[in-house]
Amino acid sequence: MATTGEFQAIHAIYQTILEKELKHSLPLPAAIQEILGKTGATSEPVASVAEQWLALLDLAVSPHWMRNYIHERGAEDAALRGLIRFLVSKKVHSQDDRDKVDWLTTYLFRKREEQKRRPTSWPKADVEEILDGFESPMLSRYAEDLLMEVPALLDEVKFFENFSQVTDSRIIQRARDLKNQFGDEFFNPDVLAAIVNYNLIFGDRFHTLLKPTMEKVREFARGSEEGRSPSDEQILQSDYRLASDALRHLGEIGRKETIGQGAGQAGGPNSQPMTPEQQLKQLGIDVEQEALYLRNRSEELTMRLRSTATMNSIPNSFAPLMLTDWEAGAFRTLFPDSEQSFRADFARGICRTITIIYRIYEEIPSYLEKKGSEYLWKRHYDSLVYLLYEGRNQKETLAQLSAASDKRGLPEKAKQLQATLQKLDTSLGKVAELF
Image (cartoon, rainbow, N blue to C red):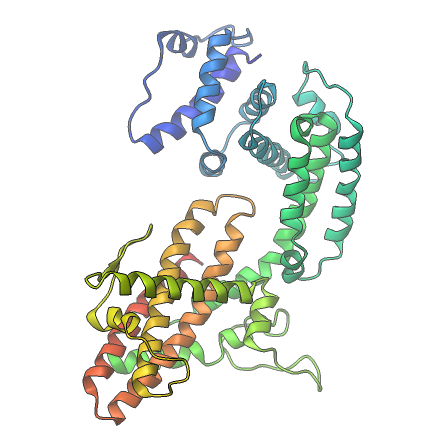
């Protein structure tokens, strides 16, 4: 049962989170206001109605909102302990309860590591101290068998040498599936101690491998020259600078000191430069899956625009994607794959460009929503890196089409391609700002 002090601390967190999301104050029952107004005897237990009120607030607070709040504002050790105790004490547990306790206990021990400046040893005694007063029945044989799989995961983690091995192994999803299999025994001190130990060790390795990858992406994303005017000539020049070497060497971790500064030296006399796909895979990006997402969205947009002849705006969760007549028309004009002509290349180039922009508009909100989580943001981050790569290649394609239009005596087509190219350039700039 929560004490008055724990109730006040937990309630302050939940109330702040919900009022931020609701954009108005939270009406409080008189009994709750009375408890919140107490200044003494904070160690006495609260009435059951107070815990029921907390359970109602907890139901409304998602794990993502809680993580964001604590990342932004921090939380005292006592408040974190109180939150963990409250969640573990609930009579009926949900998936969100397991996610919250998983993250809160790991955050608490990580914070203690930073304060003490030394790694956490086996944390069972500390977990038992947090859950002092709780009954801890013996684990079932099933749970004991599941626990034996945790050391095997940790052994696997120790052999990871680059980030692509993390994603290829699917270890994040496998660990999550394993945690879910414990059911309510997840909250047993023996299980929680093993989970916290795994999270801390895996988290250290994850961020160690991720750091050089993110730094190279960040350097690449910032590699464009700021303050350029949107004239056709400068767009073409900037496209050349951005596309020349930057991403072709992005994945060669440890082989280049900087991005976009030339080809550099190979690792040995017989070494061969990696293909763009290999470089992205080295960053842990599932190129085939990302290409499938792009292809599926192109087919979806084609169907939507052909079925509604007047549609010139595509709604999404980021911002409405406004289409010009030639952009919408490109989706509505069907050319067989076998046709090799300027008009077919024009339509395909416009369609692919708009699809890339649409996918960017899809992924930015998802990335921003989940970037406060431990690992969930990575899938959307990968998508944005892939789209940044594809978008810059597509800029080169549109520039070539624009030049071909001028040679054919089609200045209006050239202007249309440049206008769509500028729209793509603006969207890529939004992605680059995130890194």
